[in-house]
Length: 220
Image (tube, rainbow, N blue to C red; front, side, top):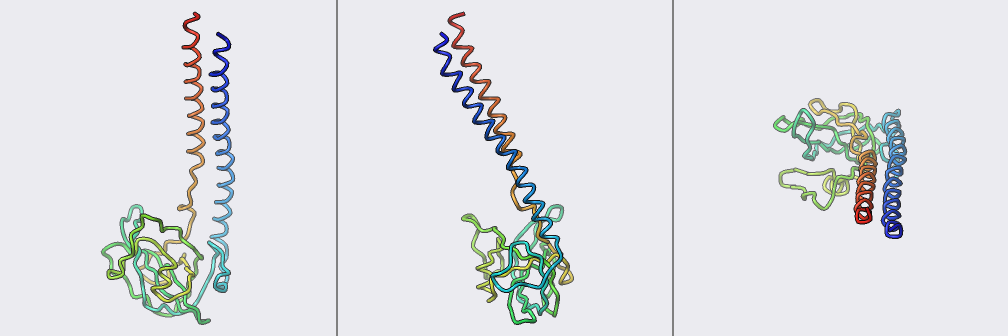
């Protein structure tokens, strides 16, 4: 009888050990991710510097740039908590040093008039490369000037700019509410994963114990 119990016992111990190990790994990864998010938050809030040369900026880098808004604007469909649907307004900044970059000016609620985006302005914000496009993202409706994600390469082609996007963190145009860069969109599900692995370990231990108990019943 004892020989019959060795395999399920070893299987139960191995399964529980593996699942607990995965849970511990997720707990450790959670601590690492929280440190990464804290570092990104500090980087986002740092003092802005002049816009770096094309291709030399880093994600979330705080920058400031002065120039003229071209008047061109794209609408990106979004929704804000406690406000509802609306649009991000993406425009073009022709900088004083001769560059042409994209600027995410912020949010306008659905149904509200979109202000003119012209004039000489100073934009303070963060460089960003949004990862919003996947295989399920609808193609932009150019006829209605309606986009479903901030597709920076495609927007740069349509508006004739370099692939540089500044997300404003301070108001630039009256009537457009800034939507600054933050860490809310960065996934951090390691706590949920850890809980899942630990619960699976408990279930595995229970099932293993039940199997061993049932195997012992004939002998009893």
